[in-house]
Length: 215
Image (cartoon, rainbow, N blue to C red; front, side, top):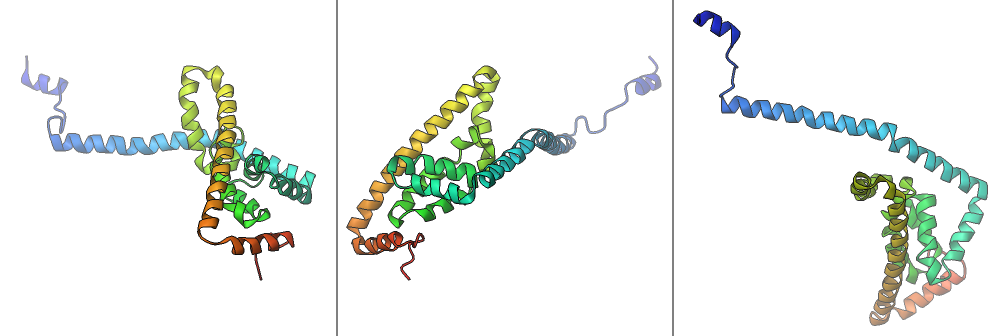
């Protein structure tokens, strides 16, 4: 065969056997591929989760406005009276209504001795709440997305069941954590000789100083 014709039909590939060129080509391909994958993920968020978050936030604000801030506050203060509701209903309402991190401000309606336990129960509900109310902790929605991704791939019909179980288990866990943290707080108050200080806090709370300000 004519060598000139062979060279035309099979041109040499520049850098085909050069390891440095291969490495640079691999890096360039995967570098732009990373941003392509990010762009696809962003497109999925814009057309999927973001509209859902906006609608849920709008709905929660509308419900709060319709019910009235005073009634919502009254329901929160009532739920703080009993341990069962203080570490279940109160964190749930705070997360759904105020979202993370504003949810923790509902602790201002509690006596000082119960605030650590409320915070523990509320912060532990940041992830389970996203199974039904992703707007409550939108910044960490990837946790629930990661938990549910495998189930959706194996059995899409079990998604709703998983969401319910995730939510229920979350309520059980936050109640246990709240009770345990309350017990630890009480123990530390006794061992640290802070009974008189917290007695003053309780008196100030009874007089209407919901922040525990003794001044």
